[in-house]
Length: 296
Ligand SMILES: C[S@@+](CC[C@H](N)C(=O)[O-])C[C@H]1O[C@@H](n2cnc3c(N)ncnc32)[C@H](O)[C@@H]1O
Image 1 (cartoon, helix red, strand yellow):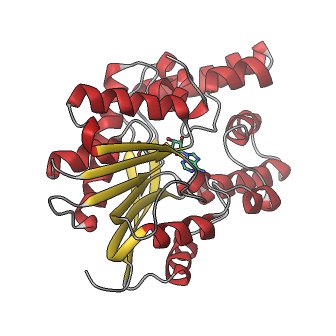
Image 2 (cartoon, rainbow, N blue to C red; image 1 turned 180 degrees about the vertical axis):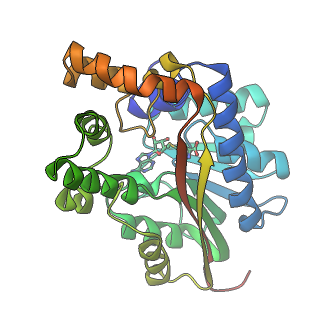
């Protein structure tokens, strides 16, 4: 199967082929999809457009709720679009599906006022022009149609790097330097980089404002912040996975940016913690649902 960075991460980069990790990812993404669909108010026979469909998380969950939906899958990734098209054939639903290669900023090939519902999950985080994406979603929705999305907030992960930098500059411990270099390979570092990266240049309030500016009303937003105990993980799996599609895995960072001695020192520190599940992980997810004014 051919790959690009998006398909490589969805197919392997988030679970490294490990069944336990894959089950954990599936449980979490299933919960995100269910919450998005609850706010989408799907009804039988509706036309659903999913932006950045990936492996089809949203569409397959929606089709389970309403098997006769008309579904438009869109993504910039051709390997992923081929994958969902094959899967639609396998499921016997290809006749009610369309597959369009386009970015969220310009939904080329999607007619004005053609969708009852637009969904998207963890996609705008990678879109440079988010205002254009909201305008496009507004354009393709029918009057009364609904938008329901969920987006991660990575800004604070990036900002925590600056705090680490300050601690290092004030004479922080040598291990902090290695931890800092690991995280700095995965998130933008410093105010200018945070402001320039589509992944970190927005808050939940920005998403709310963009929806309002595009013309949506009413708009509802929920910010979910969860600090959870991370279960014990295998070291090889931990090293082979990464937190988002643009982040290299620790294995690659150790090989390319650390000396063998530094890599061994970081492993001695981190590995027992990873294998014992001693860390807490924070996730920040914005759920936004909105309506295009008009008859519904
Ligand atoms: C983290 S994955 C999420 C995939 C899927 N929505 C899910 O929830 O499993 C990000 C997806 O966004 C797509 N993507 C990245 N940039 C995009 C853009 N500018 N417009 C539309 N899709 C984009 C990628 O190809 C990938 O499928």
